[in-house]
Image (cartoon, rainbow, N blue to C red; front, side, top):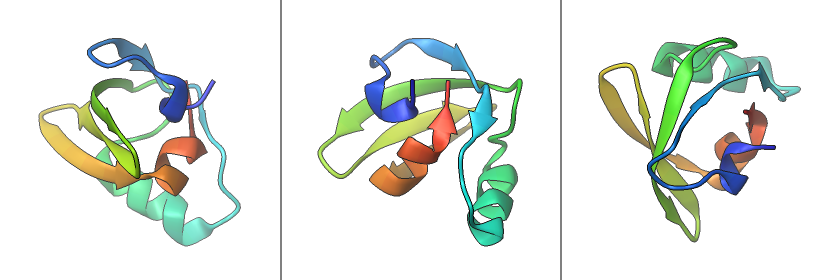
Length: 70
């Protein structure tokens, strides 16, 4: 299941990052999104979602949300 399928307000553990793009992998890593890290979906939106990782909140688009396997 990807982050796009996640329920709002529920905390998940990232299982993998499903990307073929090294730049996208590096960007997700700078946000703190890597295997084993917990992530919470604050709000699902039409074009993406708002997530909470560690102490930060980020607005990510559909492509990034689909790349995060939970």
